[in-house]
Length: 349
Image (tube, rainbow, N blue to C red; front, top):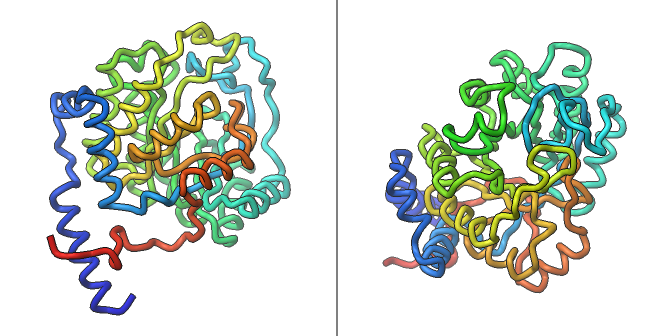
């Protein structure tokens, strides 16, 4: 791209951004979008997806549980809580060599983002955190985006992760502020918001989304999206998870949420947070190829590869590659920040 093309691209992108990126959404506006006729909703989301990104590009991330089980939290959906009798048993933090090898394998299989999850309530300033800092630095040096989800985080801990090269920190809100205490009592919504604030102060990218199918009402899904879309800056990454029921947890017998509600959530997220990466996350393994295709059409542009998402089952990598080939999609192959619009296809309106 020459300088003239680049300047034209920047000017066009700034114009689109000015008209499309909003942080002042009302719940009523988001509700009106969510409840549009489904075909109209998906069509609108697909159009926005094409204006601000490459609709054929899917980022593949790999999520590794580096410390499994034994968490003192009481999240009603979680297999790793020590409060419930599940098949998941607590294990110690993986050794550095194991984590690095997993990252090498993930990159070889097409992942451009490596995510590490530890079943901690909060980060402690100890040798375990030092190990995380070390692997963040080394995986970043491999040319991968690195994301961590380690529980609550202080401002000083966030700064250390930033200095090590951390690209993003995941801290989901799970649901609306009103429904939150129905699923978790061991920490508050405000606790979660404080960690998000610390992540932002450190200059780390934010990965923040939620879970649908927790027994919430439609208004709670709208409330979650409203909270995310009215942050001062939208999360760069918004994972949309569908509950994977785990035997032994309070939500094991929850009825399965209809796929159409998941699709509405993804499409609405794309419309109200146009530039965010919308991640089709847990629960994808129960979706058909056609259902996943609709999610990609509606603006989902990231998936997780590998056999598991922490402890939940995930799709087979070869099947994912076949699906993307069938749909004419491809995995993101570079970590460089490319232009948000397609200069070669730019014409005056």
